[in-house]
Amino acid sequence: MTSEPRSVYAPKASVHAPKALGAILAPLVRPALKRRAPSIAALLAEWEAVVGPAIAAVTVPRRLAAGTLTLAASPPIALELQHLAPQLLSRINAFLGSEAATRLRFAPSIVAPPQHPQPASPSPEAVARVAAAVASLPEGPLRAALEALGTALAAKTTGAPEA
Image (cartoon, rainbow, N blue to C red; front, side, top):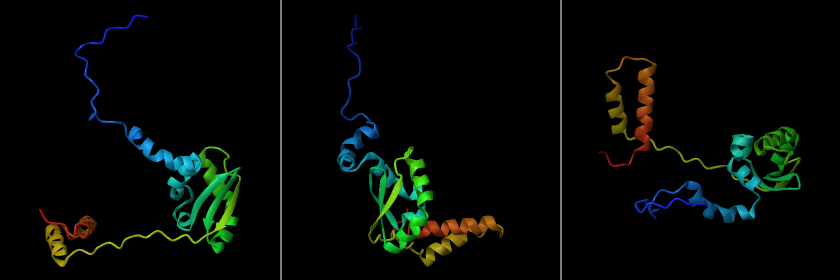
């Protein structure tokens, strides 16, 4: 086994060199994943995409053990979801890639709906600037869309210093 001599001019690994995101996140995420099985952690992360926004707003997956997925839900919601169990199980198993969950168990809990902040309304001056900017365009759907976009952007930047 002959090894090639390393060049004296080979670049050294820098402490400040870019690192892979996975290498940085792994030590941070590992303690959280040790407490939960990897499948339930993945399910928690993608819960809304797996079951849909309506069901995700009123349920939270708690535990997956011995083929039983425990969901936290209020009792009236749990009663409704029992009727949807076959569809939910097929969605969950399709996401997990195996028949990991064969049964649903519901733990009584109150799941708070997600809070969505109310969008800020733009100042009258910003609305006037947007209207003036699109005034030269002919009436029609393009002008209306650009005006709506400008108004939405003005609402987002309300309170921000102007450049």
